Image 1 (spheres, helix red, strand yellow):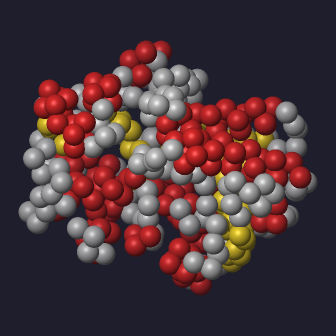
Image 2 (cartoon, rainbow, N blue to C red):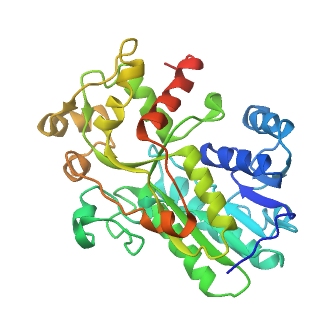
Length: 352
């Protein structure tokens, strides 16, 4: 049980990120002082939207220069904080060197943040943004899970440096967090494990999230002929921010929390956009056959290896989100709302 003093500042790593932005917004609206740990506080393109939110909120924001790979660089931002949200971690699948671009920032970054938490005596809880990628690699892994459903008990055993290194990075980083938690008694760790995150970005001009690329491809004609019917989970970015907030401030929160609003697939996601946008945008209306993807997939996109297509296309994805609903009182908005609101931002900013 950790009771967090709400008059104290709260630290957020990677505060300019897609998910972190909505969390910072929530904290500012609730009146908190947010210690925003970012790589470059001077980069107006990255921080302007947060400053604007702060101006219209009860809370205040203070920036601190810090880097995942610079040891001790989070200590200043952590001063007087009882609660730390560690959201910073690269989410990209297009990497040249998986060890350097994914594994090191994820694992060493987590280690760096938690080491600092032990140096700063005020820290009581660290909420770590993990991922369902630390639970599974491919949709087919669901079939091996007990009763065919992913739960918090399940760990990813199929990702590696060569296959799905992003999932591997999240698995190693979360294991590192639990190992470090077990070695001390000052603070506890709670992990939020989201599936695929969708919904409106707060800073559409400077987002690098993979989620954004997929939404763009659904609307710009890339997938006009059809979409791979890939099983996945979806969570709205705004719901995910709320999940972090609840994980931080619910005294009895503990362990891992699968944060998935819907068990779905890419075709269902595309069809959710039809009513509102189907007339004006070349949205896919059907699933591409798996045999066709096996032939053209690897040529169209190096991530679409035959192994990946075999393990994800036309395979149902299932996760159990009852723990976060029961323990934290979490609710999730409809899939249609998530997809429409996310796509509307692309339209408004002339990105599609």
